[in-house]
Each structure stands twice: as structure tokens, then as C-alpha cells.
Length: 315
Ligand code: GDP
Figure: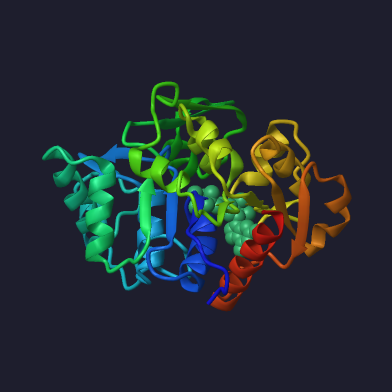
């Protein structure tokens, strides 16, 4: 457990972000971590409200996740999906039998008038999670991509077309009116806040939607704690997913430096991998190089410790 104290906020997408969120969760005292999660990937499918990044955060922190995939539940079965396909339904979005329970419950809570924040709070409590998992906003924001195959809703691009279309630009529809929830604003305004960590999530598809909602950047700038981002790009490549591919398509150099420059107006420090140590001198902010590949649970905890130690130095 870390020796310094004070709550921590982490901004996270799905799989990459949840890895570091878990490391932070495990080294911090109970109820000291708030995970502010992207909801730009959320969509409706079979009449259900599905929130992939929030669910990854829930399953990961509750230790229920499928450790191989990083998303979905462990010990999952797929009878419903198989039956849907037999009946002529779509099966491109993988919905496990156990996972369905969460979507059913959330859809019911929302239809009864609960906010998404209230819904997730209830689910997290019932899953025994001792951290706040906070949707970035209770208003709907939908990430869409302009591509060589037309404008696509996020899941159509990411899951159905497996990130194959060439991306021309990203749009966060609804972000121009959506606001951070009161819970997110309170988490960021804590006077004893130790650090705000931008997890190694996809900057364009996971973190940018969070940053794009009205008042989020200002709330980050007002916060008393240093803001540290961790690079999702190692040696010019993404560990997983389309981050580097999108950078190329946007005519950006796929490198940790591009990520640092993307965040430069918001961050006080940037963590990159030892592979990219030579970029340290070119960073626009203070830098730390360390092993950022999180394969094991101890990797997640060690990186979390180092990120917080770096934040403490920058105070
Ligand atoms: P998604 O919403 O499920 O795609 O997940 P995120 O946006 O949270 O994370 C995707 C990013 O996580 C990709 O750019 C990966 O390169 C990055 N990532 C995944 N695992 C690791 C890791 O162990 N270390 C680092 N530094 N980045 C990682």
C-alpha cells in the first residue's frame, strides 16, 4: 500500500484504462479511487442500454472479468447469443448470458428514471466494489467516426467492422451540451486530491470523449492535484486496438510523443515506456520512463505506485 495519502481520480476507457485502474484500486485504501469512465461507446442493442467501458471497469474491479480478453465476464456462456443467431438475429456484438443480466438491470433502472450514475453506483455496490465508478456524464454522448466507408457509430466501426475502415475524423455527438455529473465534479474538486491520472487508453476514442464534454477540461485545470497521463503507445505501436492505426490515418506520427502533445495543455507529467526513453527530452512536460506494459497483476500495481510517486514529486 502507498505511504502518501489522498484520493485519486483516473480517467479511463475500457481494457487499457481498466488495467491501470485496477492497479490503483489495489494499492490505495478503500474508497480512495474514483474512475471517471468514457460513455461515448454506449449504445442501444436489442432494446438494452449497453455501456462497454463502464462494464469493463465494473467487471475488472470486482474481479469478475475475463482475464484473457480483458472485457466481458469470466466463466461466460453464450446460449442466448447462439439462439438469437438461430432465430435470424444479429450476433456481431458479443453478449454473454451472465453479462446480459447487467444490461437488463441497467435498462430497467434507467427506464424507472434512475440516472446512469445512480445505476452504476447500485451495480458497483452489489458487486462489492470499494471505489467510485463514475460515468463521465449522465447525458448521452455518442462517438462517431467519419471514415472511407461513411460516418459510422462507434460500435459499428469498432466491433462490427473490426476497426478496418480508414478514419478521417472523430465526432462526439452530444458533447457540446453534455456536462460532467455532480459526482465527477466533486471527485475532481476534492481539496486533498493526490493525483489525476489519464490512463493508457485510446486518446481519440476513449479519452477525447471525456475531455470534450462541457466543463470537463476546466474542472481538470481547476483541480489542485497534478494531472499525469500514461502512454498507450509503446515503441510506436498500440499494445492492443486501433490507436496507432488511427494516428497513421490522421497523418500523425504513431508515437508516445504524439500522445503527450495531444494532452499537453492539460497535463503536468507524462509517463512513457522505457522503450521510448529517447523521447523524454522532447516531451512538452515533465516525463518519467518506466516499464508500462501491464501483463501481470504486480505490473499493474507497480505502475500505479510509480505513477503516484511521480505525481507526488510534481506537487
Ligand atoms: P478500449 O476502450 O477497450 O479500447 O480500451 P482503452 O481505450 O482503455 O485502451 C486501449 C489502449 O490501451 C490501447 O491504445 C493500448 O495500446 C493500451 N494498452 C493496453 N494494454 C496496455 C498496457 O499494458 N500498457 C500500456 N501502456 N498501454 C496499454
